Amino acid sequence: MKKYLSPKFTAISLAIGLSFALAAHITETQAADTGTIEINVDNVQPHKGQLMVALYDSEAGYNNGTAINGKKIPVQKDRISVRFGGLKPGRYAVKMFHDINQNAKLDRLENGMPTEPFGFSNNAPAVMGPASWNDANFTLGLETRTQRIKLISLSE
Image (cartoon, rainbow, N blue to C red; front, side):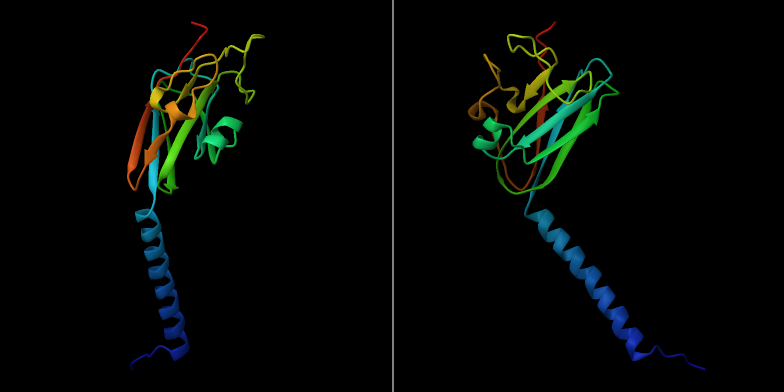
């Protein structure tokens, strides 16, 4: 005896299958139209606290601290990698610091000098304040762009 699927079941199965296919196509299309920033930080010491990473897509946001994305990564080893994906092509910059005491802020002396390690994309220099947008920004296209950032410690 042959069993046939009801037309209703067949229509539902077809709709679900098409939904999955469409979702996969949309995801593939979105991925093809975006880029990824991978940030690698070596020699993170001590192995405690968290690495606070902020991503900016404009000079105004960079200067006033309005990040488009941010991540907190527990520091448990020397090397930390962070990825920001699904980004539109454009100009970006990164600010980061090692929040050793986990108070979610960059600790400073009374004169404003940071007491915790910090860094910027392009390893841009910090001269009497944070690195400038002009020194820290870089262009992202439809690729994975890697930034290797060295933390600066002024207390050493």
